Length: 543
Image (cartoon, rainbow, N blue to C red; front, side):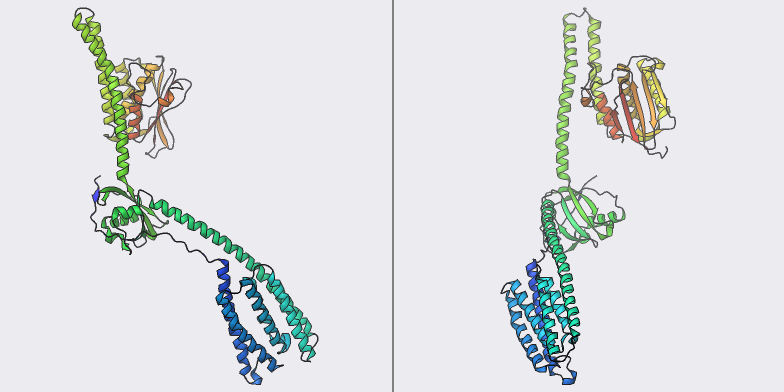
């Protein structure tokens, strides 16, 4: 897959944004704001009561018992509301003192006007309920109950005044008492609700602070990532990019840009991803240095049309790390190959020197040593070449039972084994998707080891086919001593062997070939000998 080059101008689509979470106002600020609205309400009510005196006597809703007293009270109420409003704007004196002063002014002024209007039946007591409710919202503690007691006392005094002037009957005291009860109930309910509201606000402020800190941490982490991150909205517009994206794609400048207009290739990839979320995309070469990035789209929600996050994975670093690992592995492999070849070459050299010095003494034995070591070197070269063929394969569906029958017949003939030493067991209709030559080489390595370490009795080596709803497996078992506990951790390491004649690459190559074909090779503990399993997930849909 060849990287695709993109040509861009110097300006970038969007400026990296810093996450800013609005800090909620403190309770003190919120209370002062409420106090200002309360002052405005008081001024409007006071002006309304004062202007009601300008109506003709028969249309006046209040003050018909004592018009002059009501006029004086409403005028003083209106006059006091102005300096009170100015004190609230200056935040001086302190908040609690201002609340108490304003409640006293409201209750006394309304009580005076209530007495001048005939007591409870005037309806002015309802304005006291509003005052108590507002004071409960802004007053911490239990001062609101004191305000309710003051309002009740003022109402009773106004009612008594009306009775003494002969404008009300004595039973009107009961109405004043009920009004006082309403004051206490209002104050209590408002106090409870206000306390709950204050606790909720405190919790919300704490949560907002935690979220703000978390957002800042996330932003720092995202900015410090080696991969580029671009946030897209539902229209494909670029809303945010981290520092790496800005560095790779250009200078960050303000303004929203559409991905399709700015980077047509990525815009096309976005449309393809929305149609097929499993689609893969080639590596792109971005930036002045031609760094390689793999585009990956991630849905913001379960609906891909709502927006996405474009992750530009830095493949240059991945390639560099992979190259370092590859070079390190190549170095170890070269050192091991050199070590494995040195011993046979030394034996060949020594045998050749002996042949030169005494050509007639032990010629056949010396030639046999030379041929054995040449065969050993050739075997090592074949194993190394098998590693090179790991990625060159032609996978096909192989019906295992007939394949194993043919393989075991050839194996017995090549190794000159009796027919009954290797037993084949299992179902006849099970298949694997495998490269035929790879599977033959894996089975050759496993079966050779089983024969080498087995007891050479009938059924000493068993090859068994197993399948269930999810996997199909080939088991190779022998009746030997098995693998010791100290050798198990190094069993699949290259060049590890307990046989002086072996290269130590058989199991390592077998596992590599299995993984290349989407299968796995594992050793299973078995008290009766060595037990290896080749397993692969089923793809034939059969149970």
